[in-house]
Image (cartoon, rainbow, N blue to C red; front, side):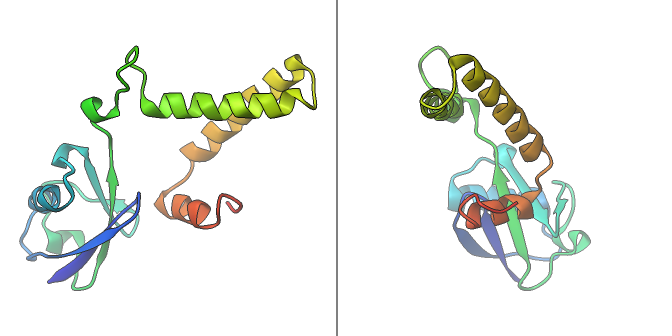
Length: 146
């Protein structure tokens, strides 16, 4: 049967699978197609994470099913070579530095720091409660709807 695998970061591919094929086998095939190691893959169908030892049939995968692929960065791909910081750490630092500069034009440095801390806290709370569909909706709305 032919199914679609959609990467959270964008793009998708169609792949032929058997009903008795294990999720771990599919991950191996996806590594060849997408270059993502199986250990960094999480496959989701209808909001449920598929376990490696489950067959496609047992997981409810049918002809035309769409699986969502979430990937975790591996340490080697994820680390920025300076002081072991991650690329995402550097990106968030840049974001908060930019926000701080904007805020400092309008409020005191103390107020700016307080606002940024509250903003960071709210971002962490919001992102921890989001599922795959929420994230897609948020991104597709140009970060205006949640």
